[in-house]
Amino acid sequence: MIHRYLKNVTTLRLLIEKCIGCGRCAEVCPHRVLSINENKAQIDDKDLCMECGACAKNCPANAITVKTGVGCAAAVITSWIRGKEPSCDCSCGDECC
Image (cartoon, rainbow, N blue to C red; front, top):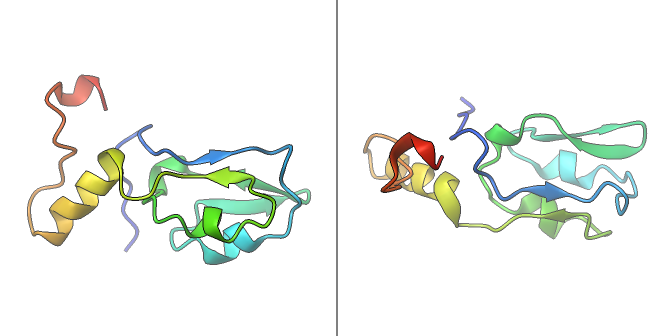
């Protein structure tokens, strides 16, 4: 089952001008966040990103960046692992997430 995390919080970034279209990012992404279209990577659904970093680590052109283990996505994953209700632990409520 693939989980959608909090909307618009992932640190995933794609620099399309650096992409060489090799497809490695799409191959290694466990949630199929990325795909290849017209020989370039594209982000299909950013909110599915769990910030694991596989795409960035496997990109030979350094066209992808993601801060692994930080931000709201990491907090949500940690909540699930601990068997608690998913939460980003933000003190500002839904306004900042």
